[in-house]
Image (cartoon, rainbow, N blue to C red; front, side):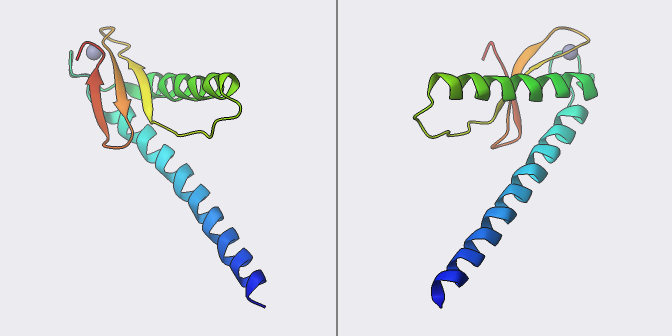
Length: 103
Ligand SMILES: [Zn+2]
């Protein structure tokens, strides 16, 4: 009797987790679109944010291919490049901070 309840609760928790994950990615994307470049103070914009998200997803896919037996631990670092001045850095998802690659 308790087993189906555990499955139901577990399933609901898993679903919630994925919603939370998708929502988080969306929030990070919006944050990055509006975030000003530390070098020229212009916002990165939609295209640079999209490229950053895509690069990050490619990095994960590549990492998974190289380490198929290892469990994925997502370290959220989106490589971002400013379209206006060419500044390069990484957006850190965990603390919503932007760090220059030179730092
Ligand atoms: Zn810039």
